[in-house]
Length: 115
Image (tube, rainbow, N blue to C red; front, top):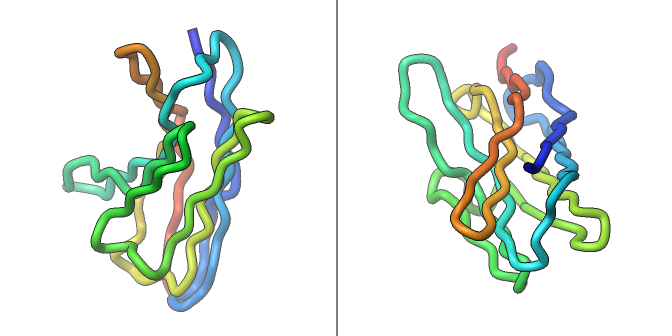
């Protein structure tokens, strides 16, 4: 089992920034992928960004150039720096961890972009 604890969501004005953090604990495999999903009301869950333990990153087109994902393998953490936020970024953001064919999701943290 893997447990994921997220932090850092909140309310921000358009154009502002937020940083999300996630820590994984439990049965951690050295080869894994961590990242972030988000789900807005009435919309399907969207994969926002991923970061493999080998160092590869991938971003959704909608966040490229605005969001940066980072991770610390030694601490089993993954962060998402979100800049130039807009209303379309409003969603619940979920940390995820994948390894050995299993996926785990965190409890989610709300990000609201509004003036």
